[in-house]
Image (cartoon, rainbow over all chains, first blue to last red; front, side, top):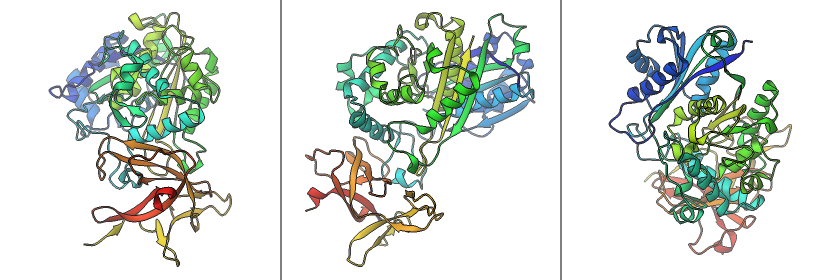
Amino acid sequence: MRDVVVLGVGQSRFGKFPEVSMETLGVEAATEAIRDAGVRADRIRTAYTSRLYSEMITGQVVFRNMGITGIEMINVENACAGGITAVHALWKDIAAGYCDLGIALGVESMTTSPIAGKLIPPAKDDLDGQLGQSMPVVFALQARRLMETHGATEEDFALVSVKNHDAGALNPRAQYRKRFTVEQVLASRPVADPIRLLECCPNTDGAAAVVLCSAEVARRYTSRPVRIAASALRSGDYFYKKQDLTSFELGGRTADAAYEASGVDPADLNVVELHDAFASEEIVHYEDLRLAPRGEGVKLLREGATALGGRVPVNPSGGLLSLGHPLSASGVRVVGEIALQLRGDAGARQVPGARVGLAQMLGGSASGLETGACGIQILTL
Amino acid sequence: VTIVDIREGAFRETDGGGWVLLGERDPDSGTVRFPATGAWPRIELGARATLFSWSTVHMPSAHFTAPYTVGYVEFPEGVKVFAPLRVAPDTELRAGVPMALEIDELWDGVRGYRFVPEEEQR
């Protein structure tokens, strides 16, 4: 297996842009990633494109605007983990020697999609979905169990939102660059008890892209390559096997696979980006990613260890809570954010001296399954 | 008006005129799950469930207007079932309270299951 490097990072504007096409957003992100990589567009041999709510052949439609045609193009979907699935698939192609240089793109125009202004609907014949389960409900039921078993409080959930909005205020690419107090978060309207509006990520239009290449090719372009030390993608097991709602077995299993493949210990991590679609779930991911022992995720949060300036900042970008969540783009964006952090190019939100980082994205909900898919990449300098 | 069940074989009426949910049990491990997939032999879930987690939801869903309450109840067999909960507005829910099964028309033309605190059922 060959070493693979993140050579270029790109992101479109993030926000609500009903007047901007999916294509335009995709082009913005892909163009920036290719320019950042310093390669010519015609060097790209493979393109993976992730999207949920677009027409067929999304990649071909985006890349035709950039003179990129005729190459191998694959369009993928894996719920919120679609973007990181695209990165993972490209990593495999390059690691295996099928390709030397390629691009992974995630793009979503939520405001022009069939679900504009709505929640992500369950599949039409999904049993639990029919009975009133939705994404906020899944995480509300989990948050309630955190309160039962972990001593978590509604203030703790608000604190996650405050922390991530503090970071987002430093990120010029965030949809919302506004700080809030715990009191303001708690005063926002209830969505699904105990989750409140300012603890939910907004629906967002946007795209993110990364250019990956073999370590050999990277030598021609950079003297400080960011290496993908491990990439793991797993799918969810049966719900009935879960003991409680306070852990994603899938998240822990995928993390363990990534730690084992990379030789990185969770204690080695300097920076983490993860799925914070709802503030309360961030505490669960701390434990699943082994950042804190089981039961001590709340303590890690309260100590400030996961805030900028802490031992292991989580979501220094501002997370989905401030950036917004263009579903298929988020999994690519988190990989790009970790690459920027390791390069020292993260601006005001930079984690000083970061050398080892982890990007995680998970999602998908269906009756009988714990969750759909989880992807994790560990990046090192 | 024809009333259809939300899912074929998810529940049935008992000889005593009550209702039970139908799950299935793995003959090897004894693990129970709901709803049944057909892979394992069917079993009736125990009459007594307890509340495991709950949420009052403040936005409408496909079939319910806000606010509505949903949650997981846990059966003695260890299986957790997601369902709508029928609770009075002033009820303070707690984990572990006994919950009774109700079979009723949940929305137009669809019959399904929900749970109600035993205290409120009386």
